[in-house]
Length: 241
Image (cartoon, rainbow, N blue to C red; front, top):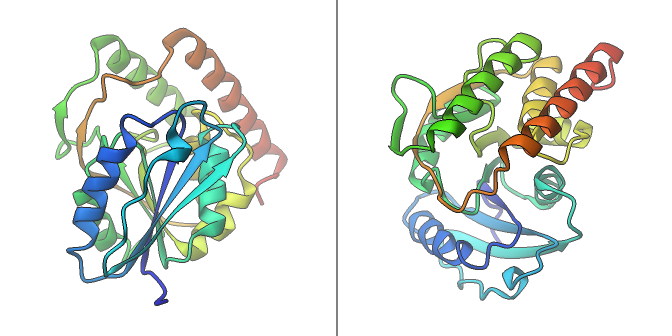
């Protein structure tokens, strides 16, 4: 089997309703591209029928579609598992709800010619938000980003968009060093990338809010603060080096 150029990693927890439509759209797009690709779905210990979803039959240049079943540990652990199994020269992490349409990948691939990481952003002037988040989520997101920029990642206006593309070499260096499995996984990944000297470029993307979002504002905000402190302390201690 020909080695894929692009690996698409999709972490999935209880996504039996949204994942089939997302797979349909991703497969339809990838089979029209000139580059080879693969899709890796990581079932993060779902309790619904996610692990029983019928996978489409790949058609060239889409070389393979795989489902990995893992114990429930969180998004970060799922992405780490998918990355370890990825064969592509470039590795994309994307959400199971397809909030950032797969068509945006070619913008990131173009940027990756000059950078090590290309990350989708909802908060740049050129970003196209088709369906907005509820007002309270927008407020929480902006306040959180100010704190994140101050403590960890100055200059990055959107750390949490679930559409990130990495060179395989960078992914293999960064992902094994990550320790966070929750919502702050993205922040830690980007912090480690900068710590190791990898270049990061934000790319404006189209984005649609999913009404089935599992964000729990109070609980997740507290958890994120704890994980943010953990990342900052790890950085001071030199753990990521």
